[in-house]
Each structure stands twice: as structure tokens, then as C-alpha cells.
Length: 363
Image 1 (cartoon, helix red, strand yellow):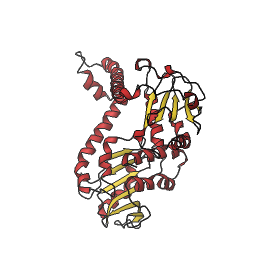
Image 2 (tube, helix red, strand yellow):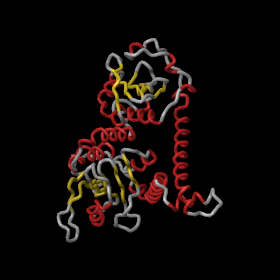
Image 3 (tube, rainbow, N blue to C red):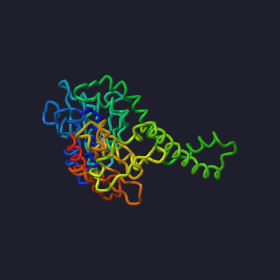
Image 4 (cartoon, rainbow, N blue to C red):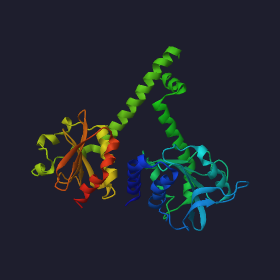
């Protein structure tokens, strides 16, 4: 699989299994070791590449261990410290990393709970690990713009100079994006004042501040929704509203008869963000069997279809979200649909095996 596909597959696994992972050791075995092997490309069973429980005496601290040390060209290049997945990643958990960073040749340190990976280097002072990461990878919300930089850490193309060279820009861009996200969720007084004084000519009084705090919150959310909807329109384009194929075999595809009106013209169909998110989950699950580009969505009046190769005769799933009780439609080997009620998008992961089996029937 391609790099992005492997990352999506690991992210799907994390979402599916996080509920049963309760210890640090389980986190390492289920999530972190697959990240080291399938994403970074290092052999976790070769001590010449990956050293578990790496020990180096640090001053008066004797026998302390860091969870993994990754070796490239005979030198320790990356240090990894793990925490259990049910705990948030905090810099306070990185005490061993700080100490080991100063006594090894490693220029990259990773702090992770198996879901979030924080990457550190020594931008602020030589041989001293920075207090803030230059890159943050969240498997629950993958920022695709970071993938080229992450790929530079892989065994096949390891490029430390390029990583360090880009780290400063990545660090500050990442911090700015996280700061903006925080302001969009819960705007601070300074942010509210900054925007208010650009649209309101009167004095910035307590009453005005209270009024515009609500307005700024509404405006930013509407702005984000507008941007997302605009991108969706461009992304969906003709694909979302492509003419339907011959539906003469539709009765074999579903236990429920399908009318031609189900795939009506674009102006009669409303594609929701929830449907798009559901489609992305299904695609992430089945990309272990086929390339993601082969998994296509097509909206209809009564359901949102996920198809293989944009072919109505190869249904993977149907999302029945345009009702109070949501259902996911799953298909057996005879292409007969069974509708299963779900209360949240995360419940789609509970049907990962069935979804993959549907795809295997067509390949």
C-alpha cells in the first residue's frame, strides 16, 4: 500500500480497538509497534534497527529506559516514549526523552499514546529537546499536509537534514493552526476585541464585548461551515451527481426495491457532512483491501451509497442518514442489503469485517 493508505489503515485500527486497550504495554503492542513497522518502515524485531527498552545512564539517573530507540546507519536517530492510549499526551510525560536526548546522537524524539504522536527536535538550543513539538500527528484527525514531512522519517528515505531544516516552519505553523482552532472554539477577549474593533466603530464597552463574543463565535463557525461546504462542492462535483448506471439488477443488490428517482438530479439531493464523514470511515476501513481511489461515493434521495469502482453492481455500504434513526446498509455475498441501526458514526467500525468482506467479493 501507499504511505497514506497505510496510515489510514492504522488510524482505522486505532479507532476500532481503542476501547479495549487499557495499558501502556497493550498500547505499544497494538498501536506503536505497527506505527514503527508499517508507517516508518523499521523492523521492530531487528535490534540493529529498533532497540526496545533502550538504556543509557544519565548523570545520577542509572538504568532509566526509554521505550524504543530507532537506529539508522549505526547511530541512534529517533527516541520514542510511550504512554497508554487512554491518557492524553502531555510534555510532563517526556522526562526520559529530555534526559536521553542530551546524551545520545538522536535529533528526533517522539512522545505518543498510540493515537497522537508529538515529534520534537532541538531548535531552541543544541542537544536540548524543545519543550514544544515541531510536528503533531493525530490519527483521529490526520492532517494530510504533514505527510511529506513525516515520510522523511521513514527508513527508505530518512533525511535528517531536510527534517531539521523544515522543523522550525512546521513548529510555528502547527502552533498557529492550533491557536486559531482554539480561538474558533472558545474565542478569548483579545481575539473578540481584535475582530470587533474592525467592524464596530463605537467604544468597546462591557456590553459590546458580551454581545460580540457571541457574534464572533457564530461568525467563525459559519465561516468554517462555508469553507467546508465550498470544498465539498468542488470535491463532489460531477462525481457525486454522476448519471446512475443501468439499474436493472438493483433488485438483486438490495432486499428493498430501488427506484430510478433515488438517483435524481443534483438539485434534489442534499449531501451532508455526516454522510461524507461516514463515507471516509468506510473508505479508511476497506483501504486494507483496495486502493482508496477505487472507493467512490454516490448520493441519492433515500440513501448515500459507497461503491467500488463507481459501479452500482459493486455496493460496499449504504448510509441511511436522512431520518431520525440512522442505519448502515451492509451487503452479503448475494448483494442483499441488511440495515443495521447505529447511533453514532463510530459504530461503523464495529462492522469493519463485513465491509472488508463485501469488497473481497468483488476483487
